Image 1: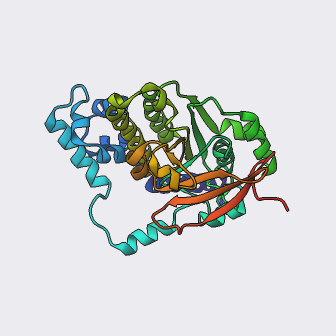
Image 2: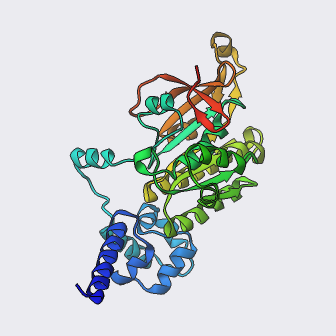
Length: 343
C-alpha cells in the first residue's frame, strides 16, 4: 500500500470517528443550517444561549419568541425542524432499558459508597448532597472533579469537570492530592477543571449559559455546584420574598437538569440544612432538614444525607432515589480525598 493510500485510509477513518461522535453526542445548532434555517438565525440562537438542537426542543415556545428578531412563525419553524432531528415521541420500555444500561457511573473514591450508589454518581441526572458543615460535601465534590477524568474502566467518565463555587471553598491543592492517589498528572487534572465563583443568584444562573457554550465545544462529564442554595439564603430574606426565591431556584435547577439531559453530564450539587424548631422536632431524633423545600426535593434525582461519624468517618444515607433502596455507607475523608475507612 502506497503512502498516499495509507493517508487516505486514515482520513476516512478519522471522518468516520467524527461522524460517530456527532451521532452519539448532542447535535450542535449549526446542523439546522442544512435544514433550511438561515445561518444568521443560528447565530442569534447561540447568542440567546441555545447551543444544541436539543436545547431548542426542550425550551418552551415563548423562550424562542423572546429572542430579538424572532416572530412566532420563525420560532415554530425552527422548533419543528429541531424536533425532526431529536426524537421526542413515545418509545418502548425495552429501548429505555437499553439506554439506561449504557449510563456511566462515576466513582466517589470510596468502595463502600460506590456499592451503596450502585457504582457511583450517575450521569444524566442530578445528585444532591446535603448535611451540616464538615460532613464531607465539598470533599466529595473535589474528589469527583478528579475521578471523572479517569478511564471508564477505572470508574471514570473520560471527561472534564465544570465547578461552580458559591461559598469560596474550592481548593486546587485538594485536586492535586487526589490526582496523585490515582497516578494522574497534576497539571493536566487542573487544566481539565473549569472553575467559576458565583457571587449572587443571578450570576449563578448566567454561569449555566456559559456552561452550555463550553460543553458544546468540549467533552465534560460532571457539573459540580457547591453549594446550590448559599446565594439564595442571603439574596432573598423573609417570607415576603419566599415565592420569588423558590421560582428563581426552580429555574436554576431546571437549567441544571437541561444540561444533564442535553450533554449527559452528572450534576452533583450540595445543599445546606436548617434546624427544625417547631413542636415536631421534639419527637425527631435528627431535627435537621434540607433547605429549598419541595422545589429542591422534586428537582433532585437522588438525594444523599451526610452526617458526621467518629473521627474522620462520615455516614452517607440514601434519603430519596427512584431506584436505589434505603441504606447507609461509612466512608472517610483522607489526605488524598474521599476513601474507605482504614481499620
